[in-house]
Image 1 (cartoon, helix red, strand yellow):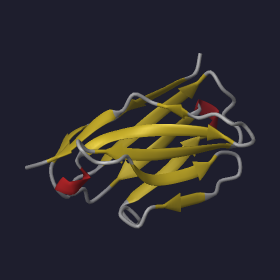
Image 2 (cartoon, rainbow, N blue to C red):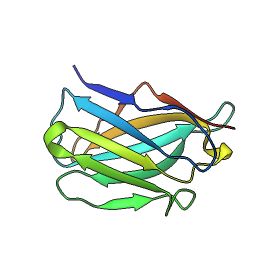
Image 3 (cartoon, rainbow, N blue to C red):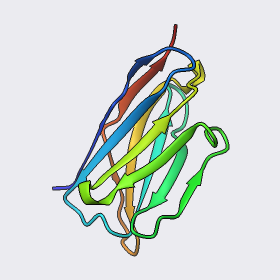
Length: 118
């Protein structure tokens, strides 16, 4: 059974940092595009960053470039999102997404809430 389990969300003050984790299971973690998205009520889900496991390609949305860092621990089948200099507008539910290369399938996590507020 495929699972993507996010953790690490919570309440943080503006300017603070959080690290989100996404533990993957039930599929091969090799050559998978792992991504982070976020969504606020009434808005479309926003893509933030992607990393291709094994290959290592990384890309970021302009909205988070320079503040967020995506990384993986391939041995632990885990993808991370380090978020620094957080702003109130970063408040959202953050989702982990997996799309194996060469397969017509994709997986989503259940989401983790991040709230940036003083």
